[in-house]
Length: 187
Image (cartoon, rainbow, N blue to C red; front, side, top):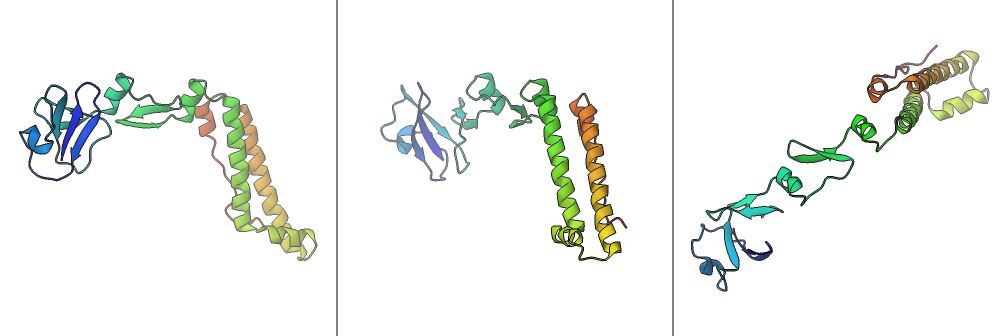
């Protein structure tokens, strides 16, 4: 593919999407070509990179993200960073270190996550309708006790997690907290 662009502002003037061989004569590609104002580039790719340059041999070369950032053409958002040539989100620890999140906010998120996880996992073991039936006295004592004991085990684990979250002083300590919710009903 050939591309003609304005030397002064880099604006693409013309693109020849045919996949022929590289042409050495710009007028064969774009008859109104003006060498003083335009440059001709070629690539064997089927698309042009969003940001590119044309080297001394007329080849289209992508401009790296690092170069775009260095030249301030692209700026990652405050909650982003560049890793391996890609823009990715910062870790929670980095967001706290940069002042974009407070440890208090992160703790609140962890407590909410543990609460949600407890309800989801408990519901897999004992669905809500069984809890309602037990509360209405529709089950025998043994079945009602199983519901009560299982719910108590989830509740106790949630409060253990909540207390652990409240006492930590760093994101690393927070990330080290692992839930141990029941995986079976508690008789």
